[in-house]
Length: 253
Length: 118
Image (cartoon, rainbow over all chains, first blue to last red; front, side, top):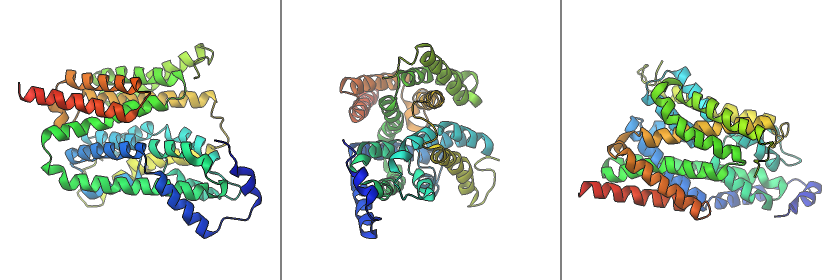
C-alpha cells in the first residue's frame, strides 16, 4: 500500500480528540482478525497451563496484563514449576524476550509521527508481542501518520483486555473440562508458536535457528536442565548466524 | 527466593513484576530507545533474532517433548507426530497458522480417542 497519508498529515493541524478516539476505536476493530482468534485460543492453552501449575486466577490475569508476551509467560511458569529462584526466573524470562527489542525497533519508526512524544512510544511498546505486531505491520500504513499512536493503542489495549477475559473464563470452567480436552488445550501453545515463529522468520538464518533450537532444546534439557534455554539460544542461534555470515548474506529472503 | 517462599498475598505479584514485567518491558523500552538508531538489516539484529528464535524454539520443543499436566498422559510419538503433520499442513496451505493448529489438534484428539478405545 502506498504511504499516501504521510505528506498530507505532516502539514496539517494536530488531530482533534475526536479523531484520536475514532482511530482508537478503529484500532480496536482491527483486532477482529484471524491472528487474534488464534492468539485467544493459545491463551486458552496458556491458562490451562497456569491452572495446572497452581497459579490463581488473579495472578494469571495480572501476568497477562503486565507481561503480555506469551513465550515470556510460558517460560515464567516453567521456571516456577521447576522451583527456580527469582533471579534465575527473571534471567530465563529476559532471555526469552530479547526478540521484543528488535520487534519494537521495527515498529517505532512506523508509529512515530512528527508530533509524537517519546513517553507515548514507551507506553505503547508494552503492547508489542507477536500478534499485535503482525496486525500493526499489516495495517499501519493505512492509518494517517498523526493518528497511528491512537490506532495502535486501540489494537494493543483491546487485544490485552480480550485475553485477560479469556484467561479468567478458562479458570472458571477448567475444573469441568474432560482430561482429553485439557490435553488438547496444552498442545495449542506449542503448535501456535511453531507455526507463527516459522512464518515470521525474516531470513533463512531464522529457519535454521528454529530447527536447531527444536532439536537442541530437549537434548540440552536432558544434559543441563538449568541452563538448557540459554545454551540452546547461544549454540543454535550462533550456528545459524554463522551460516548467515558464511553464505554472504545470500540467505536473505 | 522462589515463587512460594514468602507466604503473603503480595509476594507472587512482586515475583511476577520482577521476573515477568521487568524482564520483558526492559527489552521493549530498549527497543524504543534504539528505534531508528539501528538498521533493520544490521548484522547485530540478525544475531539477536537468531539467538531469540533458537531460544523460543527450545521452549516449543520442550513443551511437546516434556509436557506438563494432562498432555503428559499421551505418548511422545503421538505428540511429535501430530505436531509434524500439523506443521506439514501449515506449510502446504501457504503458511496458514490456523490450518496448522486445527490439523495438529485433530490428529492429537484422534490419537487420544483411539488409545482410549483400543
